[in-house]
Length: 342
Image 1: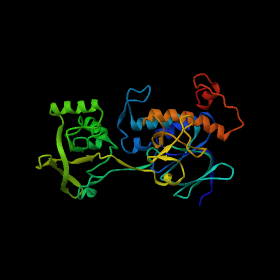
Image 2 (image 1 turned 135 degrees about the vertical axis):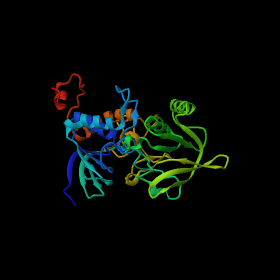
Image 3 (image 1 turned 180 degrees about the vertical axis):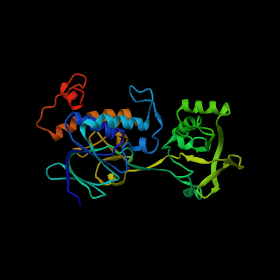
Image 4 (image 1 turned 120 degrees about the vertical axis):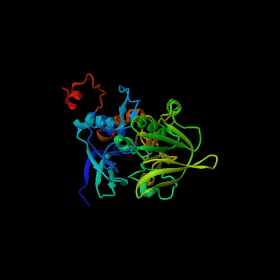
């Protein structure tokens, strides 16, 4: 067991909302350690779709998911956060002095006055289609996310699904792929209407193929895919030549150990108030997609707002006798000094 690490705040989850929480807490002189089960910061943005464009971040008409993560890391650099990757938090216990003992599966222990859960939907993994032998193609020809778009250049790609991910990658990969075929079990899509319209326009222009049916099998030598067998709605089968397949059947979200921490849960999400985004346990906060409250919107933008209000409440817990004066970064010389711009 390593020596226990003392800090003001432990943040569980290093996705965009967890990263921005470092900024808001840092402005208030609170030191943070972040723990993430992944091997790098960024959460789903970095793990599942690093090159996916995001259009609803203020001041950025469009920004790539990994680029957003990089910008957030640059923004919090003045506050010196310490990251602990490849670890899952297994226990959170309240100590006699009101602080918390946080322990990971790697044996790392933290003593913190505040715990912030910013774990997205918990631990997550893509849902695997029920296709015999698909495991043998995974990582070589079958992918559940796009790490580097260039890996799909000049490939014959079959994308399976009817939601936003399937539509987004159909649109984004079409310009660089040899051919893109979108497969869905019905001619009705759950994705954004604008994306559906764009996809149908490409189909009408002959730039994308649309096949209504379901995956029935895969063909190929070793781990190299050569074709995807589709069973169509009329019962017939067709084999689509393909060197890459991307199934988007959604994610399986699991709270994991969080479910055992005694917090009030609502449909596997953590219930919080809307003043501080505090859980049923004082001193433990939940921000981002992991929380639940009336009117909740699962947007990165909403998580940023939650982080700002959480930080104000966290400061009162860490420094209860210190008067908290609200300041603007545009006019406060002390805040600008912390940011290294003054």
